[in-house]
Structures are given as C-alpha cells and as structure tokens.
Length: 141
Image (cartoon, rainbow, N blue to C red; front, top):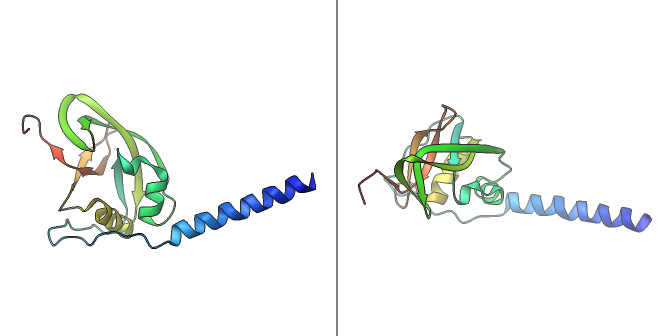
C-alpha cells in the first residue's frame, strides 16, 4: 500500500512538472508578415478543426490550458487542412476563447496573412468565431 502511495505521488509530481515545463517551454512561432490581420483587444472565440482541435497543440501554442467545446461550422467542407464552401456540408471542430496575446500566438502559429487567413464565420449555434485556413468559395477551384 505504501509503495502504491509513493508511486502515485511520484507520478503526480512528474505530471505536474511536465505541464509546467510544456507551458513555459520556448515554442518556435514564426514572426507575422506585414500583411497579417490586426488582433482585436479582449477575448476572441476561435474555431479549430485541424491541429487546433487538439488540446495539446492549443496548450503549447497559446502557452497554457485552453478549454474548448464541440462546435459545428455549417456550409464548409474540410479538404485536408483547407475549407471549401459547400452548402450541404458541416465541419466539426472545437471552439475556444483566447485573449489578445493568445490570438497573436495563434496568428503566428497559423502564419495568418501569409499561409492561412483568419476570418470570422458563423457557427451552427448562431455565434461567430475566428477560423484559420485556406478558405475557398464554392466554384473557385
């Protein structure tokens, strides 16, 4: 019994240390290009459907834990890491809230304005959230 208690204490200490190290680890985020979108002050809702749907990716990129909930983006179909307009489709992902610094870090991670765009889109629940990706209108391919 005593051995189990020590093992659990050591495991908890290691897990706590790992979370602390990951949260403070220097993560390479590329600088933003001059054409990057402006970052609004305050909190922003973000819809993640690819790597940003992963809680560990969000943790590392934002620099701390980010709670999320399931969300649907109607009218868009996922093709790889891109979105294509499709009125019949729904893309499922996660919606979460970040502060201005968190959004700035996400912009750097997604290379907003260079690799991907950050645009506001309506979600199925009637709210809006920022969405990152190559967002292609129907018929543009």
